[in-house]
Length: 487
Image (cartoon, rainbow, N blue to C red; front, side):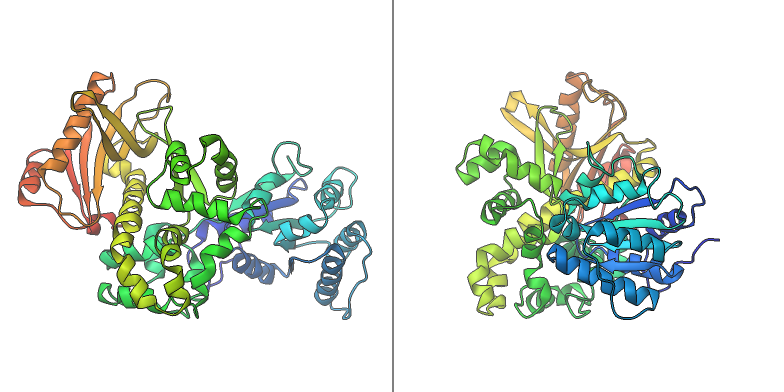
């Protein structure tokens, strides 16, 4: 019997289906699941609903010592079993044994597990022993779900030689809502001109819609600037410091100033390893470790250049951090004194060029990936930005949306589409000519461009000459905001 998703949970159909399949599985080998995801994505919300639906035990850990953690765990377990008071545990070995004895079926959810593992590093090994053949969980029908927000810790639970490697039957990463779903969630799916700048700040994180801004949402593009001033830039609103907390919560980050400097460099357009190092005035070898840590924490992602295998760029994965690093840090002294309006007046153009512009390009890449079959009639193997060398003009051509067919990345491949994205500019023939030039240069380098579709993505529209060209050639496409937000 499938457990129905509660009406108060917005979207998350796939996540709920995965959790319920895991809980309802009859196989005795299905005993452990791992749920992870960045803060504020609704993991606890989902798991709490699941526990209520099946009568499971849900314990949310805190940043406690081992003794305090055991005490709180004993209180929660006693409350769940209806006995009152609390169980007194002297070790996690004892606590796990009693847990499986008192919760013989259903689901056990241990939320914010990294806190417990930090205070008691032996805990994953104790759980491994319980789950292994001959362990106390072997004869139990109960399912165990471990959940956490510290991505570096959760990613290591099942990796390499970790004790729990090979034991999990479910690995669920709760991702932010995609840009279309986020627009519905914020009530602006029919206002793409508002949805894009809004998503450039809050992304697809559900908690930012209600808990951190008092359920305040901009009702129109005209209200957007005032909304930014009264919420994101307001020291009295919880969202104001959220970007700092996202970095501070990661256990692997020892020097926040260095990591903020790296993020700040990326946010201001220094996206290559060398560019970041030069911006910080450090050798590139000195920033290797911070970049690896930020990748492990899922705060930064590394993207391969579509046409230069040896070149990669780094992008900030959380829009709120891009906004903080690109806008808030440089005006922090104004903001802390409550001068949000002055800070926004000084930063608004920077926001449009350094935050919204690159974010719009990212949305266009997501659109191209999602719509590739309908738009191009082909399955994409790789969608990213890329650079094409133009030796004759001694320059390079930046391709914002390159769609390549599946194939060996080491070999030249079929180019399905080349695209340029502009948020605040009306696009014209000069943008199309640049794409044509890039297509011809790639053909010389043995890429198959015989069927390449050239696409202009614009948040401001297209001039008549470009529209006429597109109408006359089915290998030229124009994608406006309305098309970008069609489901």
